[in-house]
Length: 196
Image (cartoon, rainbow, N blue to C red; front, side, top):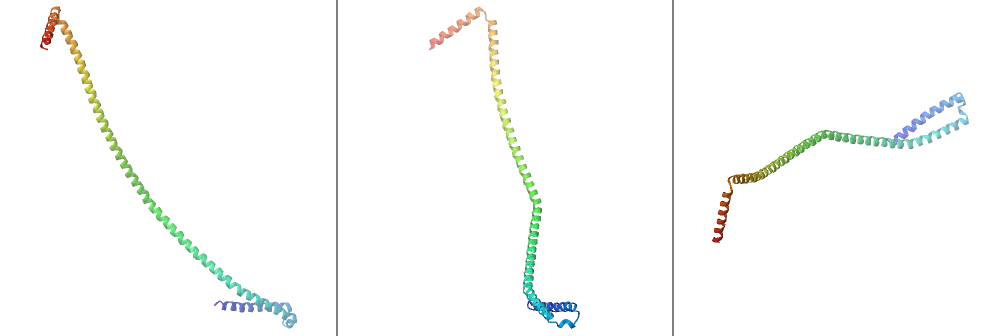
């Protein structure tokens, strides 16, 4: 098929060139009578050599040029299709990520809510434990303060009782009773001393 193209192309080129040259010569010479000039033959020969040379160069270079150009265009089309497929794949991945992003955000919210509830429960438990400890400490302090107050109260009561007893004894005790008490005390001491 590549050989038929240059031959057909060359044949068409020669026919078009021949018709063009003949029309140019007919206009230049003014008819067919003067076409037999020796200069006209050389013009035809030069034209044919030029036409064959151009046709050969065109037939030799254009198919390779068009083939290379076609291959380049096809490669570009394949690359463009690949790029399009990659872009569509990436777009699909991004859409999937965006769709998953909503669920991930909801999952993070759920986890954060659960962590907050666990932390709140821990704080409530710790607060309750602190309150129980403070209540126990307050009860112990109240009990200690009560014991201390009772001891002080007993000491005060004992002191008051002694003072009251001293006042009563002083009011009842006269010099005769006092001498009798001292005598009894001394006799008790003497008896105790003799027993030992």
